[in-house]
Amino acid sequence: MKSGFDAIDEGPHLSESPTISLAGEISDPASHPSVAALLGRFGDAILHHRVSSGTQHVVWIDPSCNLEILRWLRDDPDQRYDMISDLTAVDYGAGRPINVVYQLFSTVYKRALRLRCELPLDGLEIDSIVELWSAANWLEREVYDLFGVTFRKHPDLRRILMPHDYEEGYPLRKDFPLRGRFSRAEQTRRALNQAVEHSYIAEEMELGRDPQQATPVNGTQEGDAGREVR
Amino acid sequence: MGLRDVLPGGGTSSVTGGMFGDGSPAFLTSKIDWIINWSRRNSLWPMPFGTACCAIEMMASAASNYDLARFGMERMSFSPRQADVLICAGRVPYKLAPVLRRIWDQMPQPKWCVSMGACASSGGVFDVYSMVQGIDTIIPVDVYVPGCPPRPEGLIYGLMMIQEKIREESLARHFEHRAEDPNTVARPHANDAQVRGLSGPFGNSTQQEELSTKELGADIASSEDLIP
Image (tube, rainbow over all chains, first blue to last red; front, side, top):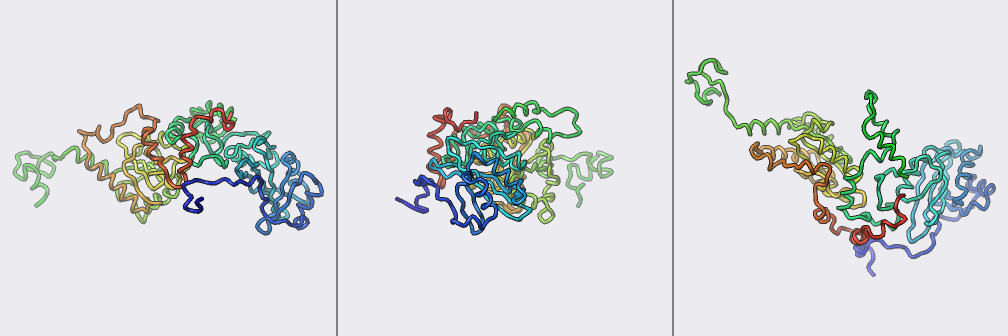
């Protein structure tokens, strides 16, 4: 079996391991005040705790309690995680669950915390946290667009980076071929056939409109149709 | 010996009241091709379509150190209706392809196109699902400027090649230079076979290209990957 650069023509290899090794080192939960408080309050919903890169505390939580836990982390006077630095997802391939990652920061206590939710491939649904942090709106749309995770009760869940009528799947999944599923010719044809206005809703089309212009630009009506693409 | 001596008729013409006073001819002779090509190539207005780092070099070309205005590109035309040459600087994703095509369709003839940099010309390192593999699959291109990104000298050289191209054009053969079927509006410029040729095996995408063609249309229609 070839390895390294010699194996470059064989494409990427999938790991055979059925489980994900939890990245990071085992550490005392008491070393981070929020982790200790989470364990005390939510108990079974807190699955694992690891420390990565020396200071980054990572907590695996039960996906069904994500809204409850995150709301408590935001509102509790001893936690006050008032900023969501990032919301993303990781696919480890080989049928293993997709992790949704919340990176929180407390500007009050100058403290960072990372939460992860493991979602099995046949149940890619989780509650939206847009009601907690509006900044999560586009981030959740991005995860939906590129990984196919559905966020329940998201106010405006539609693709954000790929075209609205993209049919090749979810590009950041490990089983997605690098060049896409369609041939280049088909991709080019589809690209030129797409109606650009359909990627936007009426409010977004309104942003690009000249305020001096009395009548709405063409396509505002079509923009309404874009809402139905969910 | 002045201009009047070499003009037809010279100083001995019987025509009076000419452009230089008495004795000079009242007309100049030239080729209309020469006049038109001279004025066209010295007043090219670029339509900047900058999407990435190449656009930084394009801006540097227009700034005072390189001063694109010396060559007649006095004004970057941000409206395609008033533009003569489209400079596509940077990578073009498929989502942007219809925008590029529409801007090209909106430009009035005569028009030319410069593909600036590796990504615009061939897709560059972005041999991936989201990226157009060379804008010549979308629109016709006159000059390709290599580089990643090209220096301003490179872009200026490319634009001078456009000027050279204009110099050789003739109104009598305009259809040879700028034939464009109205039916090609919003259509791909390259045909399917040409696009397939562009996406030949490269790097570690070899296997995935086979996968892409194998799976084309087969199980995707029934796949759960489809967005409802």
